[in-house]
View (cartoon, rainbow, N blue to C red):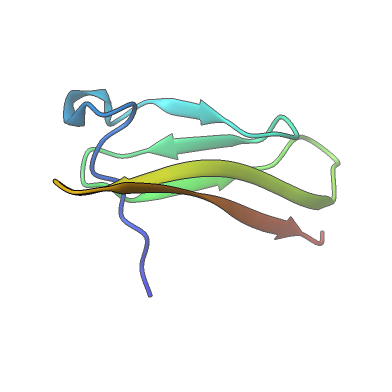
Length: 70
């Protein structure tokens, strides 16, 4: 499955910006909703960030974990 980001902080105009992760990595969101992850320099382990999925009825927050091995 593909994760596509359609808004940052509830605003679709916030795409094309960087988001920090728990371990200091960076998620860079492109205007098309795709994203790139950059880990901290010389770091390995699990990094994570939260996303909230919403519709007109409800929302749920989940944690995305990225494992960096080398």
